[in-house]
Image (cartoon, rainbow, N blue to C red):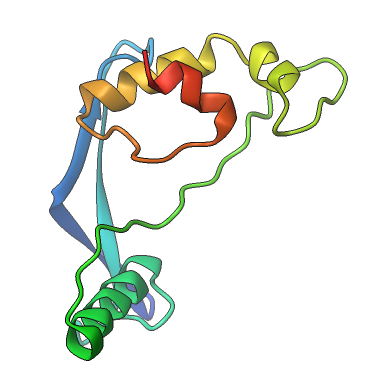
Length: 126
Protein backbone atom coordinates (compact mmCIF):
# COMPACT_ATOMS: atom_id res chain seq x y z
CA UNK A 1 0.00 0.00 0.00
CA UNK A 2 2.84 2.44 0.82
CA UNK A 3 2.68 5.99 2.05
CA UNK A 4 0.17 8.45 0.70
CA UNK A 5 -0.49 12.15 1.08
CA UNK A 6 1.14 15.37 0.05
CA UNK A 7 4.24 15.33 2.29
CA UNK A 8 7.05 12.97 3.25
CA UNK A 9 9.18 12.61 6.37
CA UNK A 10 12.86 12.11 5.53
CA UNK A 11 14.95 10.74 8.42
CA UNK A 12 18.15 12.55 9.36
CA UNK A 13 20.42 9.79 10.66
CA UNK A 14 22.77 12.38 12.17
CA UNK A 15 19.86 13.20 14.51
CA UNK A 16 19.36 9.70 15.93
CA UNK A 17 19.08 9.36 19.70
CA UNK A 18 18.90 6.27 21.89
CA UNK A 19 18.49 5.78 25.61
CA UNK A 20 17.66 2.81 27.79
CA UNK A 21 16.93 4.99 30.82
CA UNK A 22 13.18 5.20 30.27
CA UNK A 23 12.38 2.18 32.43
CA UNK A 24 10.82 0.32 29.49
CA UNK A 25 11.97 -3.15 28.41
CA UNK A 26 13.23 -1.81 25.11
CA UNK A 27 15.31 1.34 24.68
CA UNK A 28 13.86 4.51 23.24
CA UNK A 29 15.50 4.85 19.84
CA UNK A 30 14.31 7.58 17.49
CA UNK A 31 15.42 9.65 14.53
CA UNK A 32 14.37 13.23 13.84
CA UNK A 33 13.44 14.03 10.28
CA UNK A 34 12.66 16.76 7.81
CA UNK A 35 9.22 17.20 6.27
CA UNK A 36 9.47 17.59 2.50
CA UNK A 37 7.14 17.98 -0.48
CA UNK A 38 6.58 14.99 -2.78
CA UNK A 39 9.35 16.26 -5.08
CA UNK A 40 11.82 16.42 -2.16
CA UNK A 41 11.70 20.20 -1.78
CA UNK A 42 11.62 21.41 1.85
CA UNK A 43 8.12 21.94 3.19
CA UNK A 44 7.81 25.61 4.19
CA UNK A 45 6.22 24.80 7.58
CA UNK A 46 8.80 22.19 8.70
CA UNK A 47 10.39 23.58 11.89
CA UNK A 48 13.74 21.90 11.15
CA UNK A 49 13.75 23.24 7.60
CA UNK A 50 12.79 26.70 8.80
CA UNK A 51 15.68 26.69 11.27
CA UNK A 52 18.15 25.45 8.63
CA UNK A 53 17.06 28.25 6.27
CA UNK A 54 17.36 30.88 9.01
CA UNK A 55 20.88 29.71 9.90
CA UNK A 56 21.89 29.71 6.22
CA UNK A 57 20.50 33.25 5.84
CA UNK A 58 22.46 34.39 8.90
CA UNK A 59 25.66 32.96 7.47
CA UNK A 60 25.05 34.47 4.03
CA UNK A 61 23.95 37.93 5.15
CA UNK A 62 26.09 38.47 8.23
CA UNK A 63 28.88 35.93 7.91
CA UNK A 64 27.92 34.50 11.30
CA UNK A 65 27.21 30.98 12.45
CA UNK A 66 25.17 29.82 15.39
CA UNK A 67 24.45 26.58 17.21
CA UNK A 68 20.68 26.40 17.44
CA UNK A 69 17.76 24.04 17.78
CA UNK A 70 14.01 24.16 17.93
CA UNK A 71 12.21 23.87 21.24
CA UNK A 72 10.62 20.57 22.20
CA UNK A 73 7.59 21.21 24.38
CA UNK A 74 5.53 18.65 26.21
CA UNK A 75 3.42 18.25 29.30
CA UNK A 76 3.04 15.52 31.89
CA UNK A 77 -0.61 14.59 31.90
CA UNK A 78 -0.57 11.69 34.36
CA UNK A 79 0.91 13.40 37.41
CA UNK A 80 -2.48 13.65 39.14
CA UNK A 81 -3.53 15.70 42.14
CA UNK A 82 -4.52 19.34 42.17
CA UNK A 83 -3.02 21.68 39.62
CA UNK A 84 0.26 23.44 40.37
CA UNK A 85 1.80 26.32 38.42
CA UNK A 86 3.53 24.82 35.38
CA UNK A 87 6.94 26.33 36.19
CA UNK A 88 6.87 25.90 39.94
CA UNK A 89 9.13 23.72 42.05
CA UNK A 90 5.93 22.13 43.40
CA UNK A 91 4.95 20.95 39.90
CA UNK A 92 8.46 19.62 39.29
CA UNK A 93 8.49 17.74 42.61
CA UNK A 94 5.10 16.18 41.87
CA UNK A 95 6.50 14.75 38.66
CA UNK A 96 9.50 13.18 40.43
CA UNK A 97 11.37 11.10 39.29
CA UNK A 98 10.69 12.42 35.79
CA UNK A 99 13.20 15.30 35.76
CA UNK A 100 16.26 13.34 36.98
CA UNK A 101 15.34 10.44 34.70
CA UNK A 102 15.03 12.86 31.76
CA UNK A 103 18.44 14.38 32.57
CA UNK A 104 19.99 10.88 32.73
CA UNK A 105 18.39 9.87 29.42
CA UNK A 106 19.64 13.04 27.74
CA UNK A 107 23.13 12.37 29.06
CA UNK A 108 23.05 8.78 27.79
CA UNK A 109 21.87 9.96 24.37
CA UNK A 110 24.67 12.61 24.36
CA UNK A 111 22.05 15.32 24.04
CA UNK A 112 22.62 17.54 27.05
CA UNK A 113 20.68 20.79 26.72
CA UNK A 114 22.82 23.93 26.67
CA UNK A 115 19.97 25.82 28.32
CA UNK A 116 17.06 24.70 30.41
CA UNK A 117 14.47 26.29 32.62
CA UNK A 118 15.45 27.19 36.15
CA UNK A 119 13.45 24.20 37.40
CA UNK A 120 15.72 21.81 35.49
CA UNK A 121 18.97 23.71 36.07
CA UNK A 122 19.84 22.14 39.42
CA UNK A 123 19.12 18.65 38.08
CA UNK A 124 21.00 19.14 34.80
CA UNK A 125 24.13 20.44 36.52
CA UNK A 126 24.64 17.33 38.66
